[in-house]
Length: 237
Image (cartoon, rainbow, N blue to C red; front, side, top):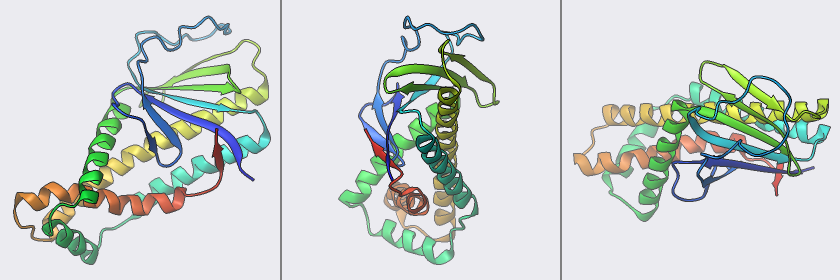
């Protein structure tokens, strides 16, 4: 049974809308004023307004055990996808196939993949350099906001009347956002590594082949990730 969950990633450096791993709807946005509304939160460690943000992960869902289970399941799929990337080995036959395709020149599909890869790597860079900001709402009612840096430091402020199930939902939001961010980094590293391997293993003819190679490798890496993530867990609202 699918559940209704809205997953958004607000990326201040993006120029267009898109998606991330078939889960998150991505969109550009000015995040300078995020977190400065008048909602009442309990006392605790405040989220600094000057904290450099790499983007805002927003999760909106109805609080229920079914929703929590589905979100936990998708976070685990992301973890599994990352492990598959760690274990994936580019064989000589696959490298030769990619090299041959690169030699054949650019196509409309490869050009599209090149653009997608460029945007993805730029987004990955922003996610690595800055804090993640994760917000959870229960059908539009703000429950909590957290910031997380790459050293694991977490600051969370809660709605003062947040109940235990609502806090649990935010924990699942954090897990899903951070698992996505880690998978993004592993994906970027795998693309870079495979491009280097193909260029070294197979003899490429000229700079034109090297230009289109990253887009071809991007498609090959996605072939590792997306079969693991493909599911009907979420009916996105």
